[in-house]
Length: 138
Image (tube, rainbow, N blue to C red; front, side, top):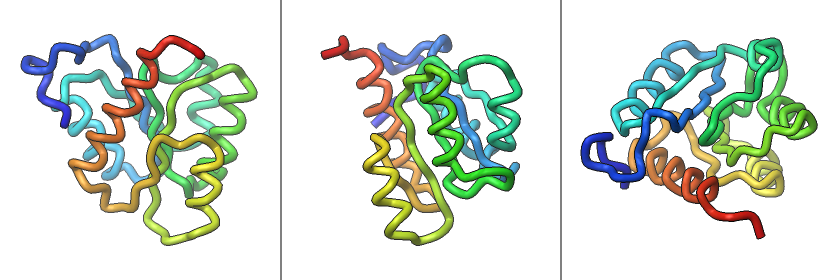
């Protein structure tokens, strides 16, 4: 489990977790949780906002809602990968959808979590994603 910044030796404020969800309250809650764990967080309200920002999101991992208002989380992820973004991704969703979950795993997801996102599972997924980032390429 991730400990708050002061107690977690690998946790740095330079590690950025990018959260993309069209639900403002979900963004706010996940941002607070990520920041409590000692990481920097940024939020985006849509896939278009991420793409229009003109920069690659995050330095740690991506948290993407499967059902964004303007595109699917999978479409956003494919666009980011096509543009050279290679960050571990955690997909979240409020809908039970076996096909979407299967697609998420095939896309290389670190985790696929149902909303409301369980705190322990979310922090464990971030830890796993950040561990992947710190591993040397094969």
